[in-house]
Image 1 (spheres, rainbow, N blue to C red):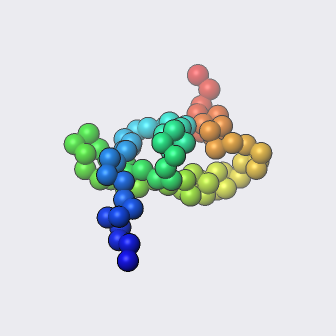
Image 2 (image 1 turned 45 degrees about the horizontal axis):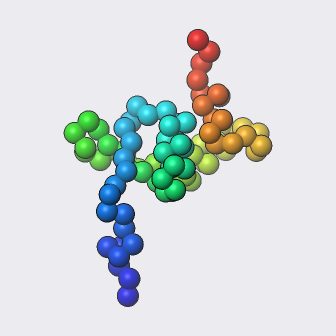
Length: 80
């Protein structure tokens, strides 16, 4: 029987709490992963963000379905 140890990632990729949604989406895509732990400067676990969280958030914002998740930052950022 397989265990979590058999399929887990050993080199964990993390992201900081101040990272943008765009950077988060790019990180997930670049590493072909579905979620990342969010850690503070000392490496303490603050939470976990997944692709499902991004999809749900885009639904909560009632964005047009044709928008790519990487375009989400256009709606979240305020103009300079």
